[in-house]
Length: 170
Figure (tube, rainbow, N blue to C red):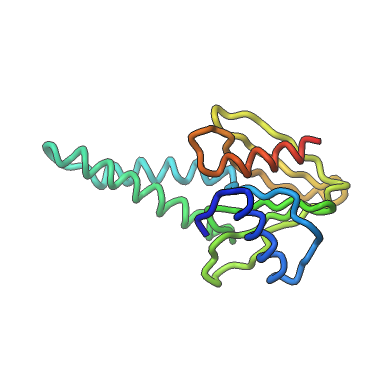
């Protein structure tokens, strides 16, 4: 599940929705997002990993860098799974519903994290540097989720995220 082209993401979303028993019409757009609060877990993991990986001399910098990367990844994955989600979430938009789906669960987590009826859901997009925070709030139930995505040209996932954000802004 490493594909980031819009066609691959839409196909993945269709398959996930079908497997979850929720064929909800045509998937109009799909993008890869993460829970917004996982950014903080990653920062803490980076800091802890760099301290653990640091040492003396030239190898200390390399060890600190490697430790930071591994620490950030481990902390982010642990924080995500503690909340019942994968690090990468697939947001799939159909005519009637916005689906937030786990990606690559390995059978550990349920497929659908949340779904929001488009008719009663407000989508708010906030710029945070090159990132975007997408907040979905269902006015009928008060249910809300805050996601983190990217529209930066350097991001492999930007194409799908842009399409989802544009579709939800309409």
